[in-house]
Length: 286
Ligand SMILES: NC(=O)c1ccc[n+]([C@@H]2O[C@H](COP(=O)([O-])OP(=O)(O)OC[C@H]3O[C@@H](n4cnc5c(N)ncnc54)[C@H](OP(=O)(O)O)[C@@H]3O)[C@@H](O)[C@H]2O)c1
Image (cartoon, rainbow, N blue to C red; front, side, top):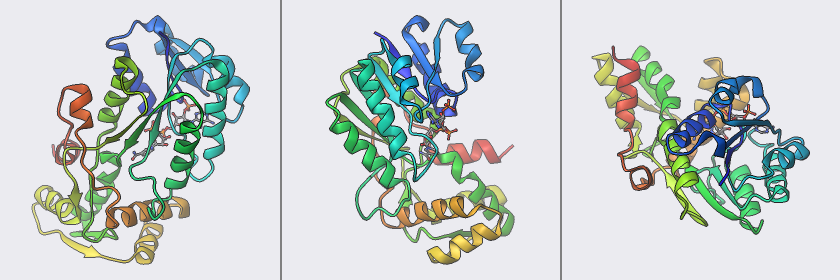
């Protein structure tokens, strides 16, 4: 059986490929990318590397011919990637792929203010209607993406947030990769929606407690509204689109859309997920 991973030069693609290769012969693994030169290390290990760009569906069909099970990694073009994902699903279908595993988001439902939701909801709908077998991996927010907020809190003594009393079940990218690899290699996860979370949901008080532990001094939570939060991110140098995206995740956290803790990591990999506190302590203490 041939297993393929799209967007394989990105960190999630590479980590998933490494996890798959722990149990699968490299000759049964295909990595597709727009940047083949970035994956020569895998070629040397006997893995197939082929070009595929969702903006050119022909490359997807050509490269995925002979593939059975595919991890479709959502692209980074937030707000404009639904067409890319539709092309990828069409290209994979044409190529004869039978099962697509897709990296989605928790709670891709109307009312969830996270700006990534529309793309993911549309892709999930397309996949369900494709006639192929599918698995939705609803990956929670990456834990490492919160490190800058903790560092900022350590430096200023204030954890500024628009997440209210909401909590988020941050997960590591490595745990997301391990789950993706398990779905690709184990089988038996067809037509399932899997929430992929860390072991607990952490609210702003929890973030401040960690910052306090590392700073060795008081860190207070400063709750602000979405507008004030976006302005603060802009003032700190974030581009407009990134500031709006981060604000929308805070709003989604406040609304309870990111708090659901699942047992998926342990169930599929046999080991406990890394906690948010472990990520923070490993990165910010010496
Ligand atoms: N859960 C979270 O907190 C979180 C955070 C950030 C991102 N994400 C999502 O998870 C995905 C993987 O993330 P990552 O951690 O590996 O970071 P990343 O560096 O943002 O990965 C971007 C990926 O998109 C692929 N891509 C971009 N344009 C493409 C196109 N036209 N056709 C095919 N592939 C395209 C890239 O593949 P090549 O360059 O190899 O072609 C690359 O693998 C992201 O794309 C994003 O959708 C989730």
